[in-house]
Image (cartoon, rainbow, N blue to C red; front, side):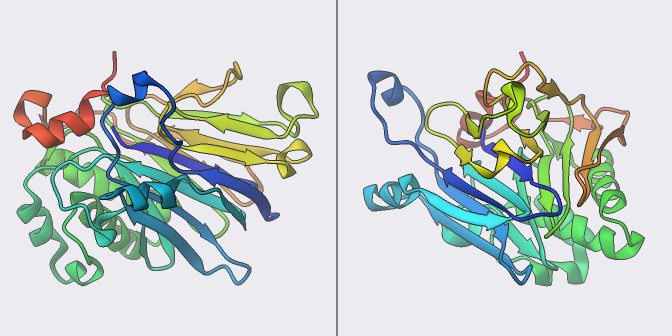
Length: 291
């Protein structure tokens, strides 16, 4: 499955270093499927979105992804992509930008043509071939209709769940000051950590990593500041990580007030199984299935 990480440092900008792909250093790495793209999204001093991303189609691309990325922002989203069928190109690599927001998705949506029909003129926001970017466009369209980010995510995910075949709709969306994350349905995990300043010991910088070959993040600033992290897996041994339940939406505001509410309480009308996906899509999703 793709790897997702979202992070908020609250109202103050936080310096953080991200590694989006670790160099292989063991035989075990050879048994894992290579990722198809990496991306990091954050906001500059003028609160404009910045995206650093690269499809991984060659050795030189992997070297690019293994470089440390030191950035400063209030919010961040990082993504390691395992493509589910669309071409491995820059425009298909997460995160995506629309209306000043950044978005990354982990999952598969079927019947993309019907989704495009629902989007209508909203397709003008889409530049690539992925189901994920079309999902984001529907979220953006619903935010414009409802005037609220959380309601927009809920409305878009609910429409997809009721009308299209779905494997998973897990996503992270950030603005310059706030973060939202949805887990739906119970196929891929999504975890939340509200980390106090200095972590468990009270004086430690942030040092977290997902499974080998994925995302690692370090922040000295979080030795003295609180932070909130959402990730597709627990990234360290902190016992305060909590798994989100299917249909739960996380919202982290500019002051790190974190709310979790269940916004979808029914399974998808058509829950896709691995057997229904084409081989590449199935391979991209299999490792993250709920056990």
